[in-house]
Amino acid sequence: MAVVFYHTSATQASEFQSCFQVIENRKIYGRALKKEVKLGSRRRCILILADGARSDVIWELMTRGMLPNIERFLAERGGFHEAVSAFPSVTGCAYLPIITGFTPGECNVPGMCWVDRRYLGVKSFHLDRYRDYFGVHSYLFNRDISPAVKTLFELADNPMNIFSFVSRGCDFKGDVTRYTRGLRWVWAHLSGRWDKVDLEAAQFALKGIEEGRDFIFLLMPSIDALSHRSSPLSDEVIQGYMRLDETVGKIARTTDPEETMIVLTSDHGLSETQVHFDLAEFLSRLGFKTLHSGRRWRLNPDMAIMPSGNAMAHIYVRPESGWSERCYYPELRRFGGHKVDLVELLLNIDAVDLVAAKVPSGGVIISSRLGEAYVELEGKMITYQILEGEDPFGYPPFPGEISDRKLLELSMNTDYPDAPYQILKLFTSPRSGDIILSASRGCELRAQSRRFIHNSGHGSLRREHILVPFLLNRPLTRTGPFRTADIFSIIVEFLIDKTP
Image (cartoon, rainbow, N blue to C red; front, side, top):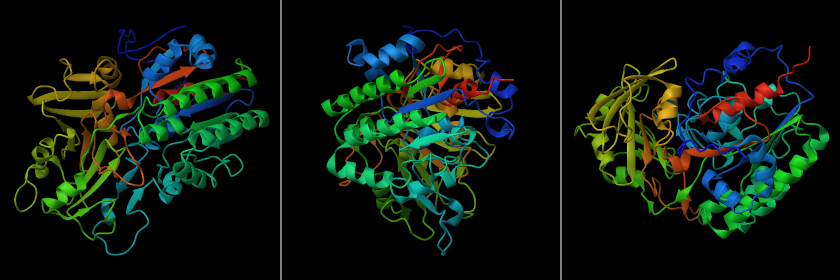
């Protein structure tokens, strides 16, 4: 069994040049999609997304013999890998790199909660003024994804979606839980019986295999849901990992490994939460007119605070010119009539770890209590310059100009794998905040909710949130390290029709 933990062994990949070579040559990746390309009907992929599953927990349980099917059918055949997910490392948004090959920012879905600044100063109602995908807005998620990207559902001939609200391109018959998902979620939340949802999901997958579906997206939600309620290592969560193992075994025994690719991954990890810091209340008490989850329809606010996970948050700030424009870093350091330095103000909060904001030229300044850095992305090259103090991530010295793949490799062994790249990509979304925060370890940026208990959280750039497992039932022809966006191209490459 090949075990690949990139934080314990050095990688030998130079620039990861082969990652998208097949995809680019066939002109089917992302925006270059051609209508004449068809995926092969003789091959199928079953993508199992264990929401919230941690790679270290899977490894530990596997070494103890508690996940025999994952070990036998995946790890022994394809190795045990890890991948960097996406920022924000939250449900839904972090599905996007796997399903589209693009980051949440590039898909223009920057968080589980966001606002569109164009409508914050307008009195009239607009459907796109804000989003909170934790409720009925989840049914707008597919509509909100940028039309410039394509999903695996749109590429497949006969796809099936099970319990995911990210399903654009899956028809009515294939999206088998489109109308029952919401009711099942409410029932499971109230009863605590997320195990029933996992078992139902597995049954749908087996039915899809019997029907000959060429792409099945199987979401198993219990690990995430139960971790929030208890802890990432509670007994009921460990039972969720064991149900996952049983599902892998059933699917593997029902399919031909030569024709079926089985992929197991996650969207994010989790860590226990000790501090629930109410960021919106804090800023409101300082005299700012804030829009937040408790006051979503406030007209012309000074700020809008939109947490996700809840270990990250977007802060939208009204500049002097009004909501039609962004508020950039220089103005954020002397904001409002009292010329408040918002960056310094936020860094003085113990629950805040990192503060990022754009500059007018297009780059981003990232600040922490260690220091401040300027980063900018041009093509595949990242400019990386320390402006003040030490590296804000605590990285060792990096070259002033570095490829995004080399940065991934060099940062994989740190507390913030791939963080500069992830921040830059998130800011590409017009819906992203003017300030983006990543929370300190053990902290969330939202008050504890009575309805949705968060004893564990995620969403930040820290490795315990953004590093996920990546296993499959065949050897990889590529070397890592990986981003979950690479899973998209690996699946498409396998499913390409290779017949004349």
